[in-house]
Length: 155
Image 1 (tube, rainbow, N blue to C red):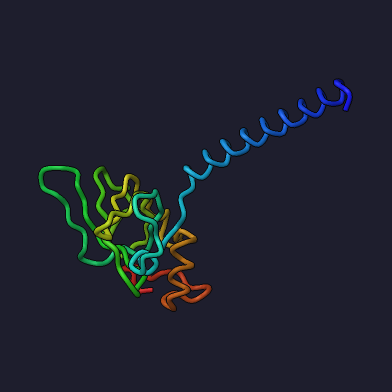
Image 2 (image 1 turned 120 degrees about the vertical axis):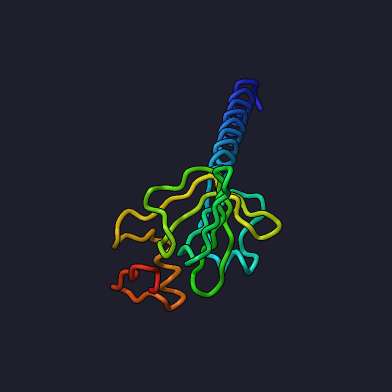
């Protein structure tokens, strides 16, 4: 093999290695920002990963909202009408948050099965429901295809 061909071959290998490293770093960064949606049934069945940022959603169970008297700590239960999961949140809840309404909480699932949320998203109006929550309720048989959830959460 002549020296010029050897030099070109090394340059091609170095270029491919550089592209491979850059691609690996990019995919690693994207994977860290991935937030998969889990229903309360999936969380209760152990399908959701522990200590990984997830999105959990469903209907806020009637009578489950507990507010701390001396801080911004809030605890409530989210259900898909099959299983329920407790969510803890510290902060001000959205104006549209209330019991019997669909929400999505972003946070981490602890070993105790409680989602510690750092963000809570509430629905926009009476007819809107997050697509993931709507699909989970349809899968559980609580919401038919064209039906909007009834006020008070009795889908």
